[in-house]
Amino acid sequence: MKKHILMKYYFIFFFITTLSYSQELTLQQAERLASLPMKCLQQEYPNKLGQLLADSTEIAPPKKLHPAFYGCFDWHSSVHGHWSLVYLLKQFPNLGNRKEIIKKLQANLSKENIAQEVAYLSKNHEKSFERTYGWAWLLKLQQELDSYNEPFARELAENLQPLTRLIVQRYIEFLPKLDYALRNGTHTNTAFGLSLAWDYALHAGNTPLLQSIKANALRLFKNDAGCPFGWEPGGTDFLSPCMEEIGIMQRVLDKHGFLKWLKDFAPALFSKKFAWEPGKVSDRTDGHLVHLDGLNFSRAWNLYALARAYPKELGHLKATADAHMQFSLPHLTDGNYEGEHWLASFALYAFWYR
Image 1 (cartoon, rainbow, N blue to C red):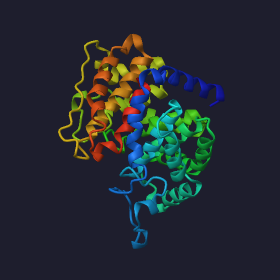
Image 2: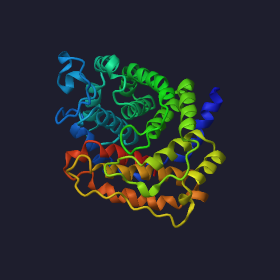
Image 3: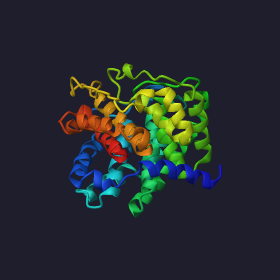
C-alpha cells in the first residue's frame, strides 16, 4: 500500500471525526477528567494483576512487575489513564497541575520502566497478557505521544517504542489465528481492539499492520447481519458489541461499501425514530456493574462517528449519543474507585468524537 493511499485513509476517517476540542470540552471539564487518572496513576493498591505464575519466583508487588503501569487498579486502566493525561495536556496547555502531571508521566514512562514492561510481556507464558484491550490502549498512548510536539513527549514516545513494537508484532502474529471473533462487551472484544490498532497503524504508516487488520476484520465481520440491539446491554458490558463492530467496519470499508454493509447489519439505525435507552447502573460501588457507564460512552463515541461521517443518512444519531453521554457523565467523580480509576478515559474518548 503506497503512502498516498495511507494518507487517503487517514484523511477520510479523521476529517469526519476530528473536532475543535476546546469548543466541546471546557477547561473546567478537562481538569475534572484529568483529576481522576492523576489520583490513581501512582496508586499501587488495590490492584488486579491478571498474572499467570510460572513458579513462585514470579510473585512480586505490582510496582515491581509493572513499574510503568502499576497504578489505577490494573494494567490497561493505567495505560489509558496515561493516554488521558497526555491528550488533555496537548489540548489544554493551561491545564492545572501541568508540571505535576508531566513529572508523573516522566517517572512512570522512563526508558528503564518500559524495558521492564517489555521483559514481562516477552515471557512465553504471557503472550496473551492484555490481549487485545490493553494492547489497543498502548498503541493509542504511543500515537498520542508521537503527535505531541513537546520535548518531554518526544522523549516519552521514544521510551515507549520498544513496547509498541512488541505489541504490533503480537497483533500481526495473533490475528490470523483468531478463527472466530469475540463479540462480547468486555476486554476481549475483537472489534474494539482492532479499531484503536487501525488508528495507530494509519498514524504510523505501518502497512503490514494495516493490511492485517483490514484483511482479518473483513474475514471476521463482513458477512454479519442483523446485530441484535435488543440483546444489549449485558449485565457487565463496558463496550457495545454492535457499535464496536460498526466502528471497525467504518474504518476499513469505503463509504459505499460501509453503508451497504450497515444497512444489513443495523438497519434500525437509519430510522429517524431510532431510540436506545442508556444502560442503567444499579450500584456504582460494584466494580462490574459500573461497567455500564462505560458502555454508554462506547455507544456514544460510535454514534457520534456515524453522525459526523454521514450527516444526511445518520445525523439523527447524535441525539442518541448525547443522551448516553448525559446519562453517565455526571457520575464520574462520585467518590467510588470502582469507576473513577478508568471511566475518565472513556468519557474523554467520547468527547473526542462529539
